[in-house]
Amino acid sequence: MNRAKLGPKWILSLYVAGMTPAAQRALANIKVICEDHLKGKYSLKVIDLLERPALAEGHQIFAVPTLVRELPAPLRKIIGDLSNFEKVVVGLDIASAAAV
Amino acid sequence: MRKQLSNSAPRSDDMFAKVVEHSVDGLLVIDAEGVVRFANPAAVCLFAGKTSTLVGSHLGTPAIHEPVDLILPGDKSTRHVEMRSTEIVWEGRPANLASLRDVTDRKRAEDALHQQAAELRARNDELVRFNRATVGREVRMVELKKEVNELCRKLGEAFRYRIAEVETPASTGTKDPL
Image (cartoon, rainbow over all chains, first blue to last red; front, side, top):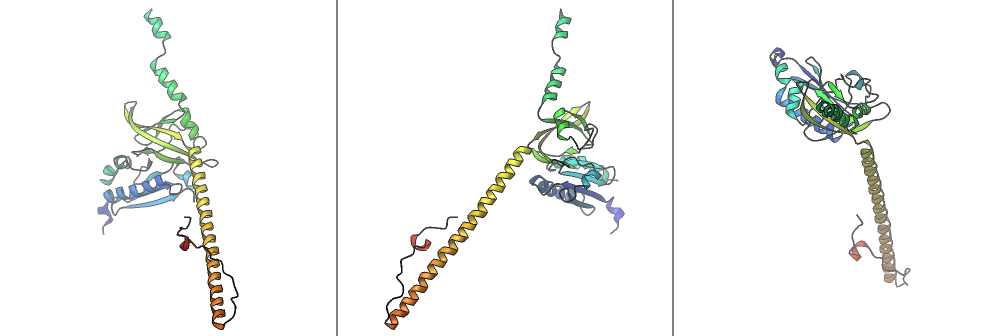
């Protein structure tokens, strides 16, 4: 498989503090969005601040759940349960960044 | 006269500013890039200790339909807030107005209730197990005594035990107290 054809690799991190109902919804929603728009070219990791609180500093996480788009640059953040798919797609700038 | 009136009557901008300033709910204006452009005092208070200057911080774009419970992690105290969000135009550009209500006390009360309910369930389960064990042992003892008496009868001896009928859940038709 030629990675160049797939476009840039997307690296997403979902920050949570325990798997609260909102965190569970956020995870389920971002998985659906990624499979719909970024299938085969994304990595998604869940970072639980209850287990690793120091990691909140790195991306300046003020509230959770927060989704962080680490790559492609620039860094973007979305907060909430990500139930508003349109806001997530626009907020992550999936359309323009995927076209690069 | 008209000028005097306009000077003495409070301007609507000032009135709205007062409402926003004294709101117990936190109010944030977040631009399309997720950067906080305005925060009222209640919002600043909620994020106190997490950032020295809330305005200008990269909080993130709200992407919710219904009110969502957020957690504001902190070194000393974690706050729970209910966030609502709506789209507005701020200084000529699209933005989000997020309102944040501190529900930390409500959340703690709910957690305490859940814990209490779990403890009561556990104690009830223990009582049920104890009840089953004790009643079961009593029934078994009665059966053994009956067997001994039956052996005595076959041997032509007097019964060793006087057996009182023991009520069991089956015999009374009652169910386990679950």
